[in-house]
Amino acid sequence: MLAVMLGLLAAVAWGAADAIARHTGRLLGACAGLMTMCLAGLCAVSVWRIVTGMGWPDWPSWWSLGSITSATIAMLMLYEALRRGPVSLASPVVSAYPAWMVAIALAMGEVPSLLILLAMLLTMGGVALVAATAAPDPSAEQNSSKTPTLLLALISSFLLAVALMLGQQGVKIDGEFTLVWWGRLIGLVSMGGLVLLGPKIPRPSGRTVALALTQGLLDTVGLLLLYAARDGLDGTLAAVSSSTLGVMTVILVRILYKERLTHFQIVGIGTVTIGVMALAMLA
Image 1 (cartoon, one colour):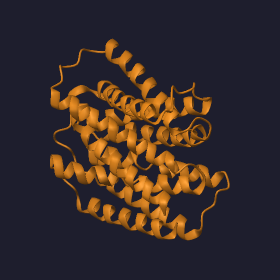
Image 2: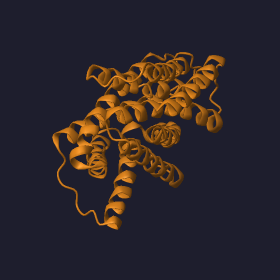
Image 3: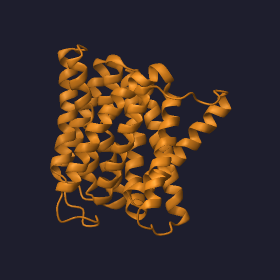
Image 4: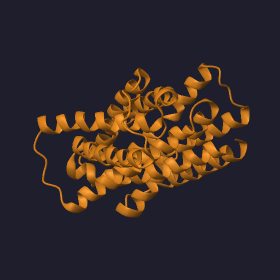
């Protein structure tokens, strides 16, 4: 039950961060938006380490470095997909990453009960329905075809699953705060380099910067919540319940930006809700 709740809280944090990323990504670009997000997360984790007396983090293990690399590329692909739109396609596809994690967990012998497996499939099926029936986003930069957005989201989904699987091992060795601290630092430096080498971005307003920093804090909190579930079946359940971030994003985008929901998407949202409730009870 605790693992499912942690996953749901992570979904809320990530869903809000992705909804904000729709706005900041289209104003700043994917690289600059991700750079600002990493800066906010790095500052937040650094303050926490100072306040709690954790001290300077050690150099991360290879597990953590692999996770950081995969996560950074995954987030860049996600931000680019959100920038292109429609968000109601990009975010639910990316949020299907637990399907990869469940498959890996099953291959490693961590077989859940039949009812839990059915609840997982119901959750993921709802996510797929929300993604497959997305309406066009007329405000997106690239609205003539949904194919680039779909491909970017699929790549991000796979890499995010790899990052979290490696990160579960990295947390055992380094701890979640060390992994996230290094992840934000490496992301900040690498995205900063891409921003310097790329085309000049427009000067952002104070509101846009504030939104991007808030986005970074929410994303970091979501990652820490998910890693708090650790590994094994608890980690898998937390990952599956966190897949509702796509639904959270779609709902928030509908409220904030008036992006249209299809009837099938509403059915998908209901399916995901039922699946997560079943996971919570069965776990």
